[in-house]
Amino acid sequence: MLLPIAGTVQAQDADAGKGVFRKCMACHDAEKGVNKLGPTLKGVVGRTAGTDAGFNYSAAMKAAGAGGLVWDEQNLSAYLADPKAKVAGNRMAFPGLKNPQQIKDVIAYLKSVSG
Image (cartoon, rainbow, N blue to C red; front, side, top):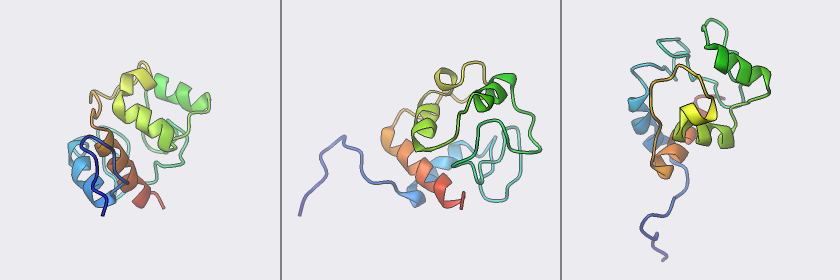
């Protein structure tokens, strides 16, 4: 039996990601498709940035989408790690997740509610 090496990133875990997503719930919904202070993240995986109907995105997020930014795993990983670096000028106040495993798990959760 192989044991994980301390500090390595394991496979994605949607259940763990749902727990991490609690940090996001003050501003985002992912299950009901309801916009809050931030847009709903239900269906975000595969969506073009700044395009969910019914939410007033920042000019920066709309421009990112117009420039071709699609929320795939790679782009979500970069955004979740450092939102201001990925989309400069966006309005999200959250500084990002610093734990790579939490990022992978949140993406797994978002994928589970994006289908």
